[in-house]
Image 1: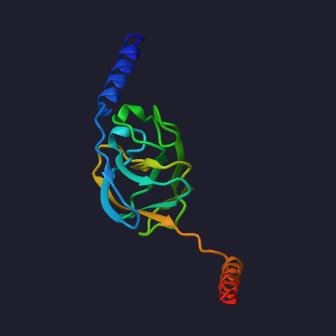
Image 2: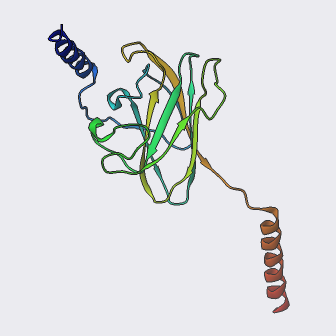
Length: 189
């Protein structure tokens, strides 16, 4: 009986290792501000970076960026993470909640919004201010409870640059300064 326990443990370990996706080169899909794309990702893909979808965009220091991922099917629970650079291989990532091998984790979107399609949990949104100009990476996954061998689930990803309007008091001040400038120039003639 005791000989069966190590054999069972070894069998379970080998099955778990075989289920994991081997390291793969990442093919970053570009997304620009104002764009929305539809794609799909495997159910319960969050534990394994080999099953994530990878998106990239370029931003400038000081840009305020909002990333939104919405489900297309009620059974999906989308989540994503943002890093301040792009890795070339899936082994550089360990989770949606930590730094990659050479880039800083900037945040995660998970359950911030009411689902677009009725279902459990919420859809994902993250708003951040970019600290530096450069390329940024977004990885999308599904955090459900089914096995990763189940079919892919659809989602929409949207990238927006947030424009902060000038406060009315600043607009009034700038208008007054412009009028003073024009009046001073007219008085010199």
